[in-house]
Image (cartoon, rainbow, N blue to C red; front, side, top):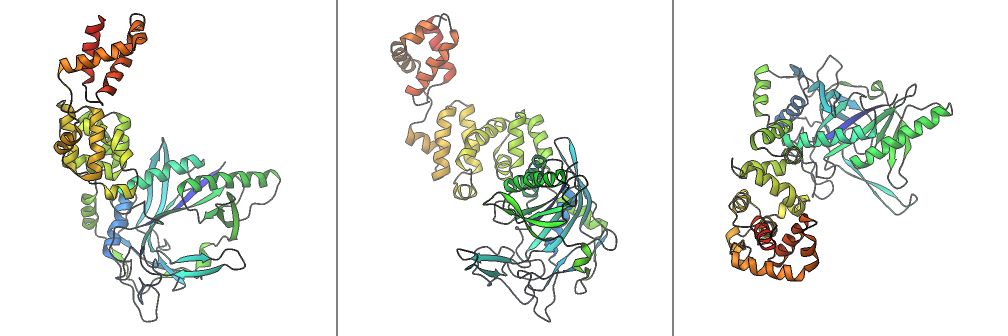
Length: 468
């Protein structure tokens, strides 16, 4: 039997400062080793001070994952030497005296299967190693401590996954949940990282680290399962070790023997006292919790009759769900959902495009209302939407400038219909045997009017003209 567990590292990117000092939590864009202070590089005499906002965000994650949040929490020193760890220890959490991490015993359901969350801990991120040089002989390793001390939440699951696909589905659900909570921006480089622990029946656990993406983690887990099964078939022992993913060769390679908990010599962080979490404080955090993705999805379906697949897509992405919430009313909700999922997602499919978009909730509401009132066809609405995203102009101005107003005049439409009938004689002759061919003629009329003709009126006129 295959057992797979995960350790997910989520940076709390929405915070202003690091976990124990005033340096910027968002280290990106700084010159190397310029976003540091005596505290985050561990100079003698410096003392850490816990970021209360980081504690709140970590508690929100625990509550969202249905974890138990203890009455008091503690911090420990995890001792190990590595060049990117300036203090030679990491301040983290460890359940040495019962459950004293920020969360424990949670659960997420994926495709009918329960994935248990063993522990959630709040800790500091280490620095970054940067490799330069074209070959192993000339390669040098540089250290950038700008990231050291960034607030990080580690989510440790039980080994409940049975396949690489389940791992990928779980991570996608978790990322949506974290984004919905407003604690992390998953698009940022390094904001959410995951390591895998893989074992087959009778074998030791192997940890897979340094995987750059969830897609690669899925492939790495698949490779590791195959590798271990191959060793077992040949009666070769599976070593307890840490392996790295070689993205170029698409294999895992041995990095070092796997450390045990005693190797880290955990002991209480004497510079940070125990933190007491009053039940009233936890209750106040529960009231801050945003509506869950599943609750949003159910509301969209039941209240606005939005199709299940559309509601699923809309509710799982915070950018789109926020836009929907700000722009809809009882009459246009379904139309706005349709515009977002069929058209807008194609225009702003990257973080950069979203940031550059000039679209407002008012634009979206006006566009939906114009479609519902037949002032503009859906085809023309797509053209208008693209123009709004790029320029931010009002809908009325775009309709006027691009001449997108819907064609209602029957005499004008009949003239276009006559042209189409003359040009498509073969299709006209087929209509008696194949009545559905009339839809082909409707499409031709739409094309000639650049999408401005009302499809239903066009269909009625065609049927009347052809006697069907």
